[in-house]
Amino acid sequence: MSAGRGLVLDGTVHRGSFELALRVQAGPGEVVGVLGPNGAGKSTLLRTVAGLELLSSGTLEVAGRVWQDGTTALRPEERAAGVVFQDYRLFPHLDVLDNVAFAARAAGTRRAAARDGAARWLTRLGLADLARRRPSQLSGGQAQRVALARALAREPDVLLLDEPMAALDAGARLEVRGFLRTHLAEFAGPVVLVTHDPLEAMVLADRLVVVEGGRLVQEGTPLEVARRPASTYVARLMGLNLWSGELGHDGRVALDGGGSLSLAGEAAPGRVLVALRPSAISVHTGRPGGSAGPGASPRNQWAGRIGSLERLADRVRLQVDGQPGALVDVTAAAVAELGLVEGREVWLTAKATEVEAYPEARPGPLGPG
Amino acid sequence: MLLLLVPLAGLLVRAPWEGLPRILLTPEVREALRLSLVCASLATLVSVVLGVPLAYVLARSQAPGVRLLRALVTLPLVLPPVVGGVALLLAFGRNGIVGRHLDAWFGLTIPFSTPAVVVAETFVAMPFLVVAVEGALRTADRGYDEAAATLGASRMTVFLRVTLPIIRPALVAGAVLCWARALGEFGATATFAGNFEGTTRTMPLAVYNAIQTDPDAAIALSLVLLTVSVTVLVVLRGRWTGQGAA
Image (cartoon, rainbow over all chains, first blue to last red; front, top):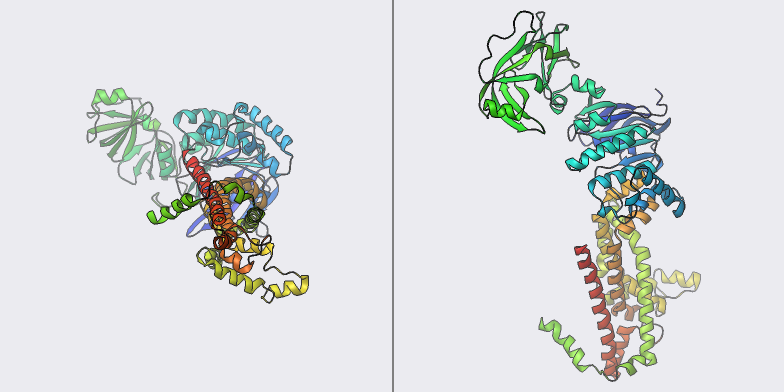
């Protein structure tokens, strides 16, 4: 398959007993978010594209050029890859301007011309007033932006970002996220962004690739992945409840871990994954009575015990043990009103219309490994 | 403590302070001083040119022989300098394994000449520089080298524009130590280069000579060397503490 102006990676990387086997594509102008837990092989993927590590087998093509295949492997300096490292790696002995001018200098451009070019990039990214600062005089957010400027100034065929916001505090994150969104959109080539932060991935990526244990487990738009997570990792990451089970002809799913849920929509009987948003579940301190009158949508209800409470930004997330166990989001007011504490017995309800089921992608029951 | 300080005190007490300018301005002393400075500086230059690539190999190479090489490089640190001088003589002497060919092919004889002083000083002092630079290369963050490579820099450019500037403090410290050691070199120089006024008689050799004929001159020369040592110490200290504070 031809990559056109984009990126096509299809191959494996071995590191000790770990094997990364991936097929990843990114079209020109497309931002592909690589999402996965620590140790999944995300950074290895980026390093392989940059040439800092080599494919054990397979091919890598960027912008119509072979960067690696069975016979050739370009060295990092021969690949036009703009890399933004997690720890930025701005050269400590050079100021911001010379950091951004580095690629041009390395390519043999004279100092004055290289600095002019670097100054234009800084201006374009709104960083001109940082030009004379040393990396040690920059805040995390500023260093992040300078690192992007340096990578862009290299005029790369592909842009690679490794956990671009992992080292930032919450305030800087918000700022940098907006900044990245703007400037990644302007970049004409493919962008590969590695992250374990779902929000970052949702906001910045056009398409997500989920990697676990060196394998691709899911691919799709952020919305698709969030709506239909293919693994418990993705579900937990997206703040979703995800259960696997067997859908019967009566529209009820017998869950593998015990319990059952009714669906409102149409779905083919068989193995399914069932997703339910934590905010779609209500908590009651007593058994809810009466319920739906005729014509109202059917309701799921089951008992459980609160395992833990976790304060999120604008709500409280309960982890409720029961059949099935579930994550439930409630307001802080509801916690106080209902007296929700650890160990408390509660009833959970969820409308059948809120329960989404889809056929399980992988054969066999979903489980660890 | 006393053992260390009393001799220094003795030197200061016995110093012929009034005659000092006169002694230091005699042609013999000026010649020895000039020769010392030139040779020590040349030895340091040679050490940097040869020692930095060597340190790079020692720090970065995965080859099996590197451990042995490292041991060999540091040998002159513990080897008595006189033995080094003998070894140099056997290698580069007129009948030495290398010297024989230099003599036959190029008519070059190194021993007992000013170049011999530089060779002897380099032999003894270069390990100081290599050890300092290798340590810095070993602890330097390889991430910067990687970043430079992704920005299109060849290995040479990475080394010159990134690695070297980042380890510069260690390089400077190593070079100063190396220079100070070369300046004070006696044993290997005396053995390999001899003790000829104007060509191989450096300050330490001049001190040794003078102590038998003109003790005041010996003390004056010693004071000069002591001043240099103290200055080097202060400079290096300043660097190290300065870095700690930065």
